[in-house]
Length: 311
Length: 307
Image (cartoon, rainbow over all chains, first blue to last red; front, side):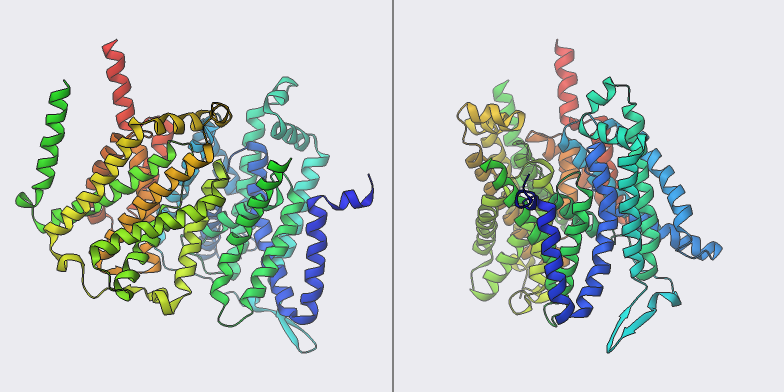
């Protein structure tokens, strides 16, 4: 294959586009670059577990962001009652949400695996509502936030000052992404999971325990997203609906990157994070930044379906 | 048998028409809301019959509401025709959007419609000169100067029109086209059905119904706002109603809307914050245990006992 043909693969295109965009931004608006990178990594780290569920279990989990919301509340109350730092609370959150994942898979998700896609969508939509409203009922819709001193740490390069705490998202994204890639490519469980994602019947035929794999992947993803909730709540106020936009944004990223393309999600979130911060940096137009995601997803999905038809 | 059925329909219609004679203002207002949700639930179900699941009802509901309010305020159209224009606006919008999004299927269509509702809200919030921005716009007065009897008749008309539309779609060849698209699109295509045209038709009509419902809502309460008119309630509640009553039928959503509408009034008084929890639970339970809904399940039982 000649190098030009390889370039046509979408993730290379996206990567080059990202680098060019970043270079232009670095000289023109450096804070857009830094904040965009941080925001992009937050999007990526939330989208990755959702992509894992969609790619392997084959379920689009519309309650994804709400699991993150619950994770954030979990870390908040852990801090209130035991004084545990939210960043330490990541570990109990991982454990707790792994269990929550097991329970929700066993009690709910399992029963719609064979059902039409429509039922799956409606079920997870209903689940999202239940979680949001339960949070609303228990903790009211008042936004809450922990007063943490270290989140406003900043650094200065020349005349340019920026927050450095948010680089925790970059770290989290790199850890989750490389961890998942290692897990999927280099462990036998991960390989089995990939096989199940490609062809559940075939995987069953060669002796892979499909149901157990689904359970593991679903619970692992929920554990990850719950732990991300703990990181998320250090910097942001939390309220029952805080997770819902992230569900949609994660789906946008997955649809843009293509299902099963974890690396692509990272690049796509870079583009979107930078673009969003770029729009935000113009005074008076900041309100429009929310549209960007959805405008891009509509565009990308359209182009993709056109391409598929052309083939 | 047929005669008794028509007699029953006429009787129900007469009771509904004369409802204001026996009830108070409060009950009429509750009925208004139930009927609006009924129209939404039916329109959602009508699109669902083609296998496309829309989470964008709140979007078109809000577009209809805003269009009706703005036409009334800026162009001086009287409330009734502005409600109609609101429906028209939602229909035209749906036609334009539909040209693009109806290429999509399954989860892609569902999520894009969910996103569209969000986009509409952002647009409305960011055009303060036209729409009043985040605070919304207040109309000079509610429709019919707040006369609850005439308001009720208006909403009843909207509901009956959507029931009739749904029945028309069930009894004509459109029904077969949509059902075959839902079952297997490739088979539908190869039997000569213009899939895209039928989907566009049903999408535009259901959106127009949602727009009219939105317009009526805006004029009844004399108020439109980004959070109120595009509220997720207008997506969530109708879905729960249609699922509880039973999908793919006219009477399923109707029964579901009446049942849940009445129940929700009680819940609202008991748990003012978080009564939507019940709707989420109903969706989950309905999907898990009786995907046919109440009407579907009872219908099956009747059929089985008849055999």
